[in-house]
Image 1 (spheres, rainbow, N blue to C red):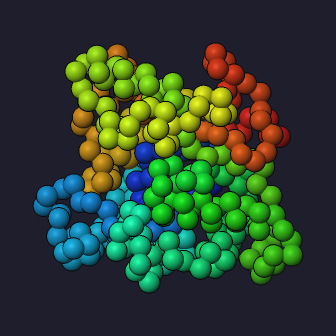
Image 2: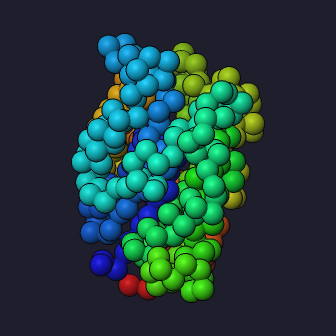
Image 3: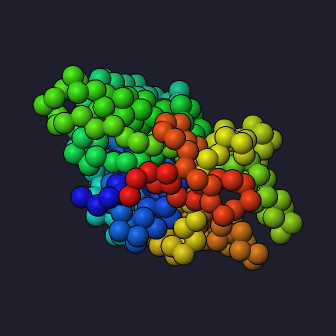
Length: 297
């Protein structure tokens, strides 16, 4: 085992790349152990590639299997070799957006037995023994049921994994030193939308209301860390392109002429919700610049 180990818990293939792709690539390049735990196959996702629309849930319903291949390619781009599915591939199904018929499907992750799902995650935590775990906030970032459930599973697993009396058959107890929730500072989102407006482009968040109402944007004072992965933005870009059924990269949001697009791809932000905050980085905001800041070794 290396002296720095990072575990990320995400709901669907592509969530890891959008939220943490540059972070993952940076820590792999620096020699840390990076493990991804994905909770569903993303079967309910919208297919953005017309020639693959037959994979969608209202056609052949084979998108989940295809997205495993997309995730494999994305992880190759980021350099991540340890990626897994909660309970094994296909154990839990994508629940779709809140209030949709997909929520009621028997295998939907939203309907999972929480104790069982947490036990699957505890087994991974105790095997990997991460120093840092990354997941979503209690609203799953924007209210998607699978993101909310991934949060519950990840946080439940952190607590249970540290309890030696809990399921000793799953391995020796392990306490995760630091837990972060992925986020975007409101100041960063505001700056990006202003730059797009200056170029005559509409913000992709216009339908979410005012900046203060965007669910995954948080006040700057809640942010604890800004991980600079701009040196690995090309790897994140390649990983996003690997998730072709879900992500369209060739748009103005990622191609701003003043390099803000590079910041969108390469700088990722986090809230610290468990563990001690480490020393501030060199930036003006007093945020950590390393998720392992303050940890021994």
